[in-house]
Image 1 (spheres, rainbow, N blue to C red):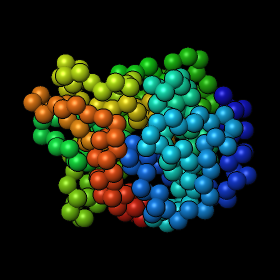
Image 2 (cartoon, helix red, strand yellow; image 1 turned 135 degrees about the vertical axis):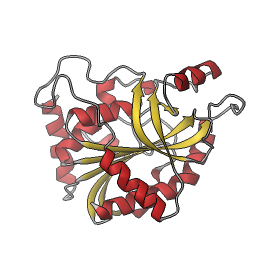
Image 3 (cartoon, rainbow, N blue to C red; image 1 turned 180 degrees about the vertical axis):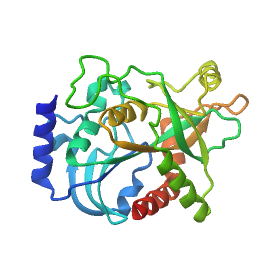
Length: 269
């Protein structure tokens, strides 16, 4: 895998002079952050050697380089999902590439279903931990040059970054929730029984991404922080039929708040 990573990185460096310290992965309906980046280069995924291609509406499929909050940054405008038919190594390949581009801090976002009865559609949830209900992306032979066989996950979502984000949100009068995110394979939205089960085992929100990316990022020693935008509710008595378009619309309404927090966080690094 390392040879493939190096080929990808060499190509990207031939296209941009930016050497990013921060990586951002933008989830469904959350691509508006790119409007705030002082963009130097945009590279389409289809042009990058060994890179997958986004197949889902709301995921444009660009790697964007520039600065945000005075930090050199790379933003993925669209991610890859297990349900698209990619294997877990392909889903998380961009995380490996980001590490070799120089990324130290990875910020992730997603749209998710709220399971906590205190949540409402439009809430911004700061992820404190996760429950992995998908195949683990580290299954298989371990490459010790990329990370350890048994990586520790006790601080998967960096607590110091979490406290900074809370302070920024409070200072800007942005309300937020905190909670545990459960990652499932999708692509079906959950049944009422599945919502109840996932909440019972300790999750406050459920979605189809983020967890594999964080596992691989931590495997490589990257610092992680993540947001969930609550785009629908899996709470008994509040469950309604949901479409992907509704998820995109709900996430888009919350995106400006998330963008403000990320900008202020990067200024403070």
